Length: 276
Image (spheres, one colour):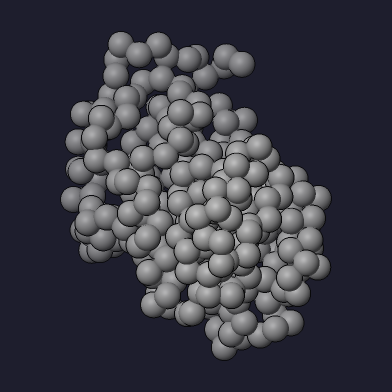
């Protein structure tokens, strides 16, 4: 895919992978609509990109909570009205909850699913009619290695990403021959602000190392878009997990038990599942 001139919407663009993707795509000449809940951050990013790449159209910032259907409709519809259509949707908005699954409340699961899964679904459903009209388009869903197999202390997050992966795979096969493609991205641990805002429910501690630089992750995603990749598994461990989860599930299970043992934090305050 040639990126220059493509009309692109990025959700969750106020920080992390979304912000880095906005910079990388702008450098290649994409016409961007950047969306997130923090409008002030979006305005700053749009200004920085406009100053850095004066030959590329300045990004348009749109405040959008992907859990609100009217916000998503305004985001997609406004972009189409302004630019004529959408060539690429990047579903990147996401939140995280960390800790023992037994300490995670049902409402925590709903919160994560609402953003990571239903928010992405809402965006896809809104943009598909326009892509169908032009018989072309690319949907890039930022999933996670955690969606390939439940990761210890990431029960809710893993569930949300697994749901996104399954839906993406179903949609991909249904759209075969339509000119619309679906690309699934599986990042591993990435150095982003998501960890600063995630809910910690107790019982586990995050790994202290092994976080990929966000700019390198974004660059790899952009290269995969240019190559027309279907899937991008970002880490060596992720690629091994993808193979072994079907071929040798017992090995995967032992590896996950080892991770759980290493990251368990018995001294961390634990929340009773019934607490509000």
